[in-house]
Image (cartoon, rainbow, N blue to C red):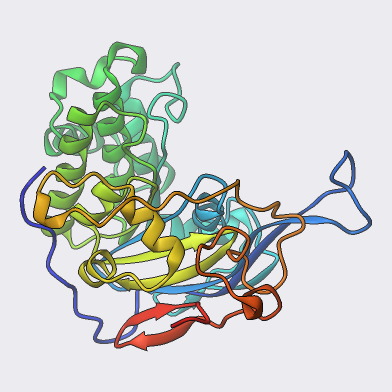
Length: 333
């Protein structure tokens, strides 16, 4: 990857994306987990903003709800409560028809570059499909636009006639990126876009995303669990645990001085090749994340926290601004 992380982005003016108190609970009516009106609290009151041209990374363990946040913003699933605004327009829970105009402004890159591509369509047809759906271009104009997109993401125009199975994993993800860029979105939700790729290919794809952002001013919601990638390309980082954001800060401040014990544990596991940057020791969390159907009272993290006190088991900590722009939910701070 390139050596320099992205510079900070100005937050002047209204944000491109505003998420307020977003919740998504999945009811459980059958099976061993069903008890009365039980529900999986996948997302449980998440709020954040993303400015134009900015990358907000959403990180946490598998099952913490970060991918559900992305799907809810995209209206692939309907939120239980809360609000999603795109450039000041409320798009919360819009129907498929009413959401269509906003699809030009917000696109997605999926985790698996193979299952997200229709194997019966050529790569050129896949990238050109959004242009046809949104009536942006047709005929030779569409072919020229697709060829230009192929070149932009590092593919050859003659590969437009190839099918997904004829590409490597990294090339397939480049096709997915080209498809997301086709109609000129302002925001891309990248859901674990490099986790299925070899490490050497991850760096190429991440650098491509950063180059595209610098050139086109696109904003990203970058959903990931690999903190080394997040440190490289994000401007701000939001850390999720059991459906909630527990810490939210500028990238450099969060990596250098985390305030939440869960964030400390995540960062302690990040490999540090430079001895000066190695942390004192790895923090190993005990047990598994609690059941989202029946989360612990008080602080959701107290059952695994090495610093927990009696108050943590009964009182839920508020997400507070403990330093300028640095928010955390912990009674001990």
